[in-house]
Length: 466
Image (cartoon, rainbow, N blue to C red; front, side, top):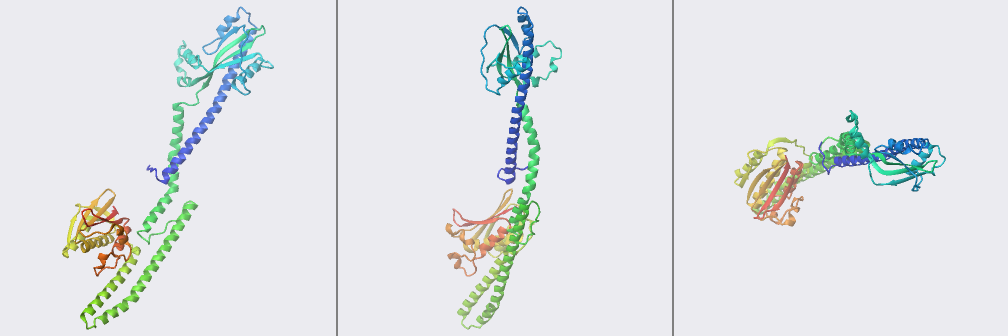
């Protein structure tokens, strides 16, 4: 499962899990609140029934026997006593837990009002769940270890209350006890719930988002492939409506670009054809000129014009060419290009590894490298070619010892028909060399750049993916 934080897939999955986790925790909280209120009401109802029964029993017990009876009925959680003093009380708002407790007591006692029932509350803990667990653990029962210790440990005390019920003789039956509840959350409860939710949501969410975003990856791949092969097959128009619309728009765009390129090629071919015939006639007529200097000058201009026509037509056909990629040893290709120039007497040095396997278009790369090495020899006296290899990229460095190029012109030289002043001193050339080389390299999915070396000269860098 490959998740990159800057990808649409990871962001959607993280956003989906974030909202799911928030909704899950909010649902747990609401459930815990409702469950806690129901548990508290059940506990108070059982407690009120017990107190009311003991109050009715106290009414039928003599004053001498009542203290002993109340002591016997007291336990580690609830303690009963008798008091002759007037009991203090607190006034509780309607609907509060203590107000409901008074209503429950009066209901079980069969009284019309709860005026003779007094309740007080303190938030301090003086026993409660600790006393209950301690009493169970200290029990003489032989199988006390069979009780669920983990669930007992989750019983918590939310405060302590005292209930006083006025008996018929004017005395008060007093019951002191904690208000117990069950902890709604614990580490293992929350962890198990969230873990189960994530275990179900994460694979499902990743699968759904992967299915929905896969057409976007296909679209991006097709757009990248379009820059290398204008004849690439159209995208399949399938999937959700938005994806189908995007694929349809991309296919329409690709078809329009293809027609535009074909029209450009047809236009360039027509110009080349129409200009070829008069240039040939002028060349034949120039051969008949008696003045040698004038004849040579005219023939040179006509040769330059013919080269411009040929180079322009070749440049127009670049994007339409569809050379298949193949696996090759780039070391051999670089060495072969350099040997070709060396055989012509050029000063070329090469530094390459023993082997560099790459999948690319050999003809396009050969032309681009030949162009750069030729420029280095033409304008920089000599060429130094170095091949560098990384895990994903191949870099071919071509250094020369020429005057370099002004920094402001490093990008301009790639524009069609752009020639620098030093270029104009050379008769051959149309200003399309670097433009063509960059188009070849870009058709490989790479890039070409120029920079001036600190020690002098110019460095041209071809960077292509392996």
